[in-house]
Structures are given as structure tokens and as C-alpha cells.
Length: 586
Image 1 (tube, rainbow, N blue to C red):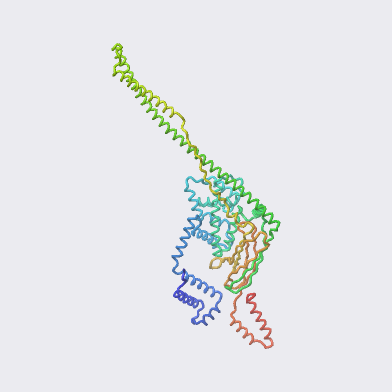
Image 2 (tube, helix red, strand yellow):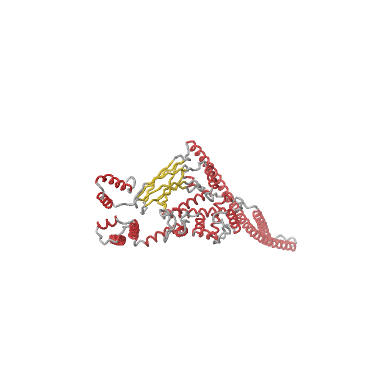
């Protein structure tokens, strides 16, 4: 657990604060009463300087000695994001520098081309494109197709390509920018011939760009960059609908798309009020939004029927896709099994042939041996016959009988060997039987893309409400300082039922430290629809504080300088003046 600042650290911070107070006010007496009086008599500029010093002291007090822990934390966080394929800290720093570079020169809302150029050149997209280029076998968008895209975008006057020839960009940045612009302008580039590889590459780059926009959106809200926040919401809406601008044509296209899904095009009416406050106090902005496009009970019934029909159709398509996938898997498994069976049969045939050849050779050898034995028997028989003829019919001796018996046995053995060889040869010539292999069909569950989105509550609208404080000094650059920008002072995400006639919310924010008149712009924004945003303006006054002692002193001087008969009226007038500088409801 973090023990927080030590006592020594707190004492050192107190000493530095008193030194800062002395420097700002010029007091030498540091007693409690003198310090209270000095603080109460400080001007607005002195209060701002002292508040800045106090904020710095607080930051140092709580973060001193924790630099290594912070670096380790952010390093671990970036490593985890990198392994998950998400943007890391250097991507946020890159986008922030691009936005700051524009804000140093202008107080206007960040233009769409500036955002697109920053996204295309972000390290996150560049790294992904380089990794794809290094994959030798991966399909890639050809140079000729990129040139066709660029020519079409220049002919349309699309953002970043409106003034041909297009500026010279690094090849990877040019590719990313073309693929992003293709998504935004695809609906008016129907005559341009594009490959499936280019369309898939465009969808992939857009998916990565959405993550970068989410990162920039969160960072801009943290830094109170209201103009960047508004620009990001507009680009998110254009990407969500595949549109290129906020002109009338795109607005009509978006209305038709909203109606196609059974929804009513949003029509909002915004009202807001805020009470005046003193510098640094918490003020409350009350916002109410009326929805003229509220869905009636009949509209909701029809919409839910349409949604049910769409979900059934989606489920049917998913089942059909799953069946196709299973069939394809079965065919692939069957083809693989047939290939394996054919290969096994070929190997078995080859082995059988080799075995048959060996057995035939062995049978030939046996046959040759039998023939040799038969020849010997024949020779023996001929010799016996010759001996019998020479003996002139002399009775066969016991030796001749033995020879004849041996010859007969040898002849029988030869006949048996020949028969055995022929039988083996016939068996080898018979066809070999093979076992049928039944294919194993793997089956995996089909993960439907967009299941998370389909599971979300589709009976609601999502809106962002932003409060923008308009700088009292105007939007022009200061004489010797940075550009004066408006600030994001409060924000709130809202989810509204389709049948809800209105919604309301309260936003608390700290009043500016400088007294004067301000204007607050309330923006109601959608990140998913084009041309449906609404805005309201409400004036706001930060009143100057008048110290009670000074008010009493002024009243006493006024009372001493007038006639007694006029005292009641003047005191009433003074009392009214005092009330005029206090916030309403105080």
C-alpha cells in the first residue's frame, strides 16, 4: 500500500508554499491572521499564480521518489498492449503531437484531413503495414491498384487528395491513407474496379484506425481539448457509416440508412441553464434534451418485429454458413483420406510386387533344383535299364531295387516342389484386399463476427454530452503567449431508450478563476450517425468576490457622508449592490 507523503515531506511542502505566498503577496509577517488577510486581499492574477504553485507542490509531494515505479508501470502496460495487438504509449504521444502542432496555429476544430494524415502515419499502422509487407506469401494491394484509387480520389476532390498532385508521402503512409479514404468514399467510387484484396486491406486498416481514434478521444478529454474531441466524434460517425463529409448528400444517405434499419432519424432540442458562481467554486450545468423522434408503442412493436425477423435471418445465414463450413471440412477430410488411402494402396501394391518377385525367384530356384533331381533320376534309370539289358534279363538285384526306389521318391519330391511353386505363384497373382478408412471430421463451433454487438441493447440510442467553455479573451492568439483555446469542462455518456421522450442530466464543473462573462456551448454528439448533432448556448458569469471587511468599511463611509434622512434609501441601495455580486441561490 502507498503510505503517502511523509511528515518531513509535508513540512517541506508547507515551507515552500509559505515562500510562494510571500513571493506573490510580498508579506513578511507569517502569523495566521496575516496570512488569512493576505489571501483574502489577493488579486485574481495572484490567486492563479498561487494555485499553480500549490498544484505543483501537491504533485511533487505525492510523486516524489516514484518515478521508477511509474516508468515500470507504463512499461508493463505498453508491453501488454503490444502483445495484444493494441496501440501503445508512443502512438498516443505521436497523435498528441500532431494535434498540438495544429492547435499552436489555430483555434478552429481539428480538420478531417489533419486527423486522417495523423492516423495514416501513426506508428501503430506503419508497424502493421511493414509486418504485412515482410510476409512473402501474403496477398498485397498492387501499385497499379493504389494508383487507380488515388486518381479516383483526386477526381472526387476527397480530403487529403483535393488538390492534385497529392503531396509526396512515404509509401507506407500513402498506402494507409488511400485505404482509409477508400472506406470513406467507397459509396461514390462504384465505377472503380477494386480487388477483394484491396477491400479486405481497407477493412483491416479501418479497424486499426478505430482503436487509435478511441485512444485519441480519451487523451483529448483528459487534456480538455474540446475541438479535438468534437473532431474525433465526427470522424467516428463517418467511419461507422462509410461516408465522407457532413454535407447534405451524406446526411440524406445517413437518414435513409437509419430508416432502413427501422429507426427514426434523430431530431433533438437542447436546453441548458447554469447558475453564476465565484472563481474556483463548483458550478452546476443542467441540460435537458427533447427527442422529437420518440418511438410510439406501435413503432416499438413494429421495430421489435423487424429486429426479430432480422435476427432470425442472421441466425439462418449463420446456420447456412456453418453447414457450408462443415461440408467443406468434410470434403477436405474426405479428399485427404482418399489421398492417404491411394498412397497406402500404392505402397501395398509395390510391397506385394516386391514380395511376389522374391517368391517367384524362389519358386524358380526350387523348380531348377527339382529338374536337376529329375535329371539325375533319369540318368539313374537309364543306367539301371542298361544294366538290366546287359544282364540279359537277370533278375534285379537288391541294389537295383534300392536305386529304383530312391529314384521314385526323388521324382515324387520333384513333382511336389513344382506343385508347391505353382500354388504360391497363383496366390501371389490374386488381388490384395485393402481396409476402408473412415474419415474423422473435425467440427468447431462457428464464432459469429459481431456477436458482442448483436448482444448489446439495440433498443437504446447512445449520445455524448460535452460542455465547452468559450474563452472570455476570445479566440485570437495572445500578444506574447500561446493561443487561447476553449476548454472541455464536463462530459457525460448517455444511453436513452427509443421510446423515451427526453433525458436530462446535471454536470458539475469548477468555475474559472478569472471573473467575467463566459459562454458555455452544450454539444450533444453521436459517434454512430451523421448530421444529427445538436447544440445550445448558455451565458455564464463568474462574479468577483468582495471581502466582507471592505463591504463593511464602504458601508460605514457611506453612512458617515450622507444625511440621516437619506440613510435608509442609500443603505437599501448598498444592500442591493451587495446581493448583485453574490451567486444566484446563495
